Length: 465
Ligand SMILES: *Cc1c(COP(=O)(O)O)cnc(C)c1O
Image 1 (cartoon, rainbow, N blue to C red):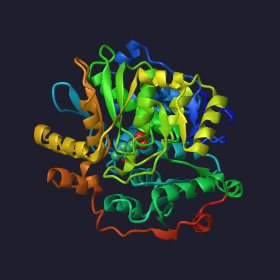
Image 2: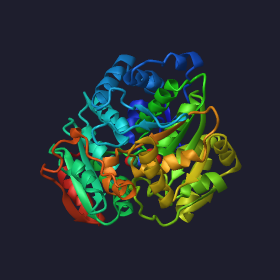
Image 3: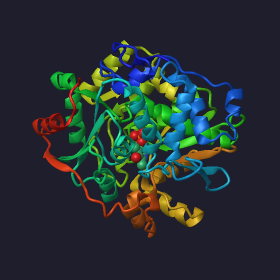
């Protein structure tokens, strides 16, 4: 399998190259040069298979040329062996035709573990036998940072520097990052907000001298391998609900458009997906883009669903590229326009292509709180605020005879205050997080200046050999 950049000029890479690179050199994102498909018989044959078996079958075409099938299977067994539920991503039935797909049984209690547990192993595997040393730099509003740190802590050949906005992540999220003792983990609290932290990370990637000294890589959802790993649970869930004989709909709480893009990929691969509900909070750029074609960025409003407080969804570029006829030059021009104006319109081809499958829904804070209360009182399910946004959006798109699956992206205890405010129930942390509140924290706090942050990274990272 070869990977091409959405902006058309970066070198074409194999799976290993695309995984280690993260972002493409022309500023675009890597996508497979064609979508592999599974036949109806191949999808039917997934019935009854374990999560790791399903994962190996769904991902095999994407890693061809970089990993053998047995290597892939072994990595899946290791990655998914760390989940607290035997089904890895179990389905919970809410009523006759509605389901929750619980994606939070990994070590750090959010769906990002599903992809990052595998990504950590892929990095290690692709560095093995080389003298390369990887410097992972990322910014997090909470969940990506904890999942990425857990996934690479203690791995050879890798250092991770994770920036978070000081005081703006929950205590559970912060402690999940700062109490990991491994010497290759470097936490940096930034005196600024998430966008500032993210801008500092981008500046390090764009600093040619800095990037020449260190082999930089990314773990946010611009990394193709993460999206690939998320395609799996769409197949796993749909097959359990009757696919390929029946079509299944999904509702996805969306921020950077990574998780829901994985659902789009599943549909392109042949999974009968009736609908993908793109659920947003009041930061509704995606809901607007999909309903009116207006993709324009506004000020980010902080909400009880911080992982969705985004006004530029990186992975939307992958959708626009695919729906726009895979024309890298045209997409590069469109994205340059967006970067200059903070606004653009979808082309007719993009809008019409999306309309068949994707539907945007904005859910305001009252509807979110009501969905949490309703799930608690009617179904006995305590759900997190992100999941509640998707569940409220799902209810607006129920159709006869189509099972509706809402993706449950975080354990409610990760956002315990918001859950308690809405439901009166204080969700307790699962035993697997152990003595999180007793462990010692390790973190430096830096001013939000490029000089301070780049000097700190340079002092602790390993230069290219
Ligand atoms: C990251 C995250 C999301 C948003 O996922 P995207 O792939 O960025 O769209 C939703 N819910 C939770 C709990 C998250 O951590």
